Length: 335
Image (cartoon, rainbow, N blue to C red; front, side, top):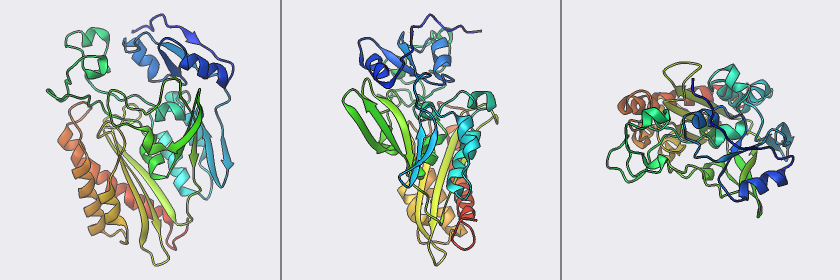
């Protein structure tokens, strides 16, 4: 069994102390649920950074605010699963997506913010120090090679968090707080697409809250994922689709976001264009699926082969679109 190496843990009493610890000298990492971060530390991937625990900060909870919803960063996935607000099928799908993350013991500890800030992963990087010692260090480990794509000048580590694709499709924004104040930005802009440094967060900045707009009455959403072992694995490919139906029974708006096929969530405008204006018949679904396949760029850094993951991602988009459309209801309103 791998043991956690001796690691300083700072336990701030309030947000001000937390920001001071994160922006102070020396390397620090944010510790919320720790379900992925502590495993990385056990594998020698912590870099010696001190941990700043959020357990004593009031950053949890879900509340209706400003015509939408505000979700605290330390809200656990188990709380999200129990949430499932009545009369809002799009938000109920968020609860379902949270239930697809790992298994209940992990869901009881893992946090919303932790899932959004999940580090990118690679089968050549997320290994023990002994296993990695047999190869030169990769880009993500401070080296100059990519074992997944030999010869590549950049890191191709994969973004495999479940919730970001669906939250982006739902129009979520995040609140980020730092020493210079707070800022709010669309969740989509949080991700850099760089496998080595996947988040656009400055030193000392902390994601504190997620805001969701109130879903339109005739909107539906769905999330689909592929994983080898249900209840255990990260997604090998994923797709989230949000659609809105107009009074004539046609799709008036669509969001299509892929997960686990690149170094960040990937929006596919061509797939969205294929759905808008249609009644989501098979030709439109087929065009959207093909657009998703063309946009996906999986490489050999996760379970299952890249050609298979690329092929399946189209199926996931079509499947998610059908479910999202069905969730709208036959009369253009929530069922």
